[in-house]
Length: 117
Image (cartoon, rainbow, N blue to C red; front, side):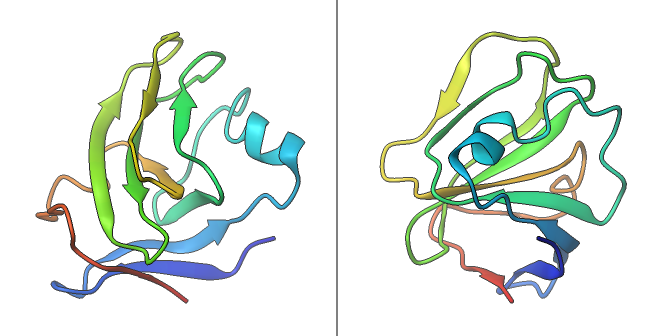
């Protein structure tokens, strides 16, 4: 499912114009694995999710972990491909996976609201 967008409330910066939202356990588990790229302006919102890995990923991403209310818990930028470490955050309820560099010009701080509409 696509069509939602993510906006950083404090700055009004659009993080993604089109979000994919996998609905099944398998879809959330696979996420962006095995894809060749993620185009600018697109992203994936995995909900629920508190941790990700970069195994089988062919491109770098920025990952924004959010709590149940959509507030930023943690931002990981430029995650390396094919890296087996699990990135997670205590209290995270979902994660936005965005093209690498999508968050570089946005000062995302813990507690900032990300509006997904």
